[in-house]
Image (cartoon, rainbow, N blue to C red; front, side, top):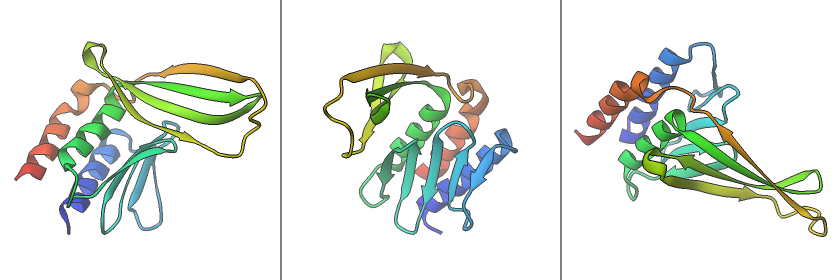
Length: 152
């Protein structure tokens, strides 16, 4: 098993521990999400992918720092998120996900959009703040264990 697959399994165990009745996974067990949250993680033979809604980041262990991927996943679980939705009429054509970190720091996860939208209509912007999924102090030891395991 490759390092990113081991990390995925550790995260799977952690999610099963804290959200036993809320985990959704695909038939091969390499995609997990927490119901009604937008948070998901997946692994394939080449990389680890972490996402929130349609916005996601690919982490290839040959080129990317897996510690940053682990940190991102736990920040998505334990930080508030600011979701900015852009509408043309009633059609939501773009959304931006920002993590609200400590010390008023903001981390932009990314922006997702579609190309087919009624461009001639007036743009309406709506901002929502979503609470953390779980408190940091509940999962901090598990997070540090996964990071330590990865570094060894």
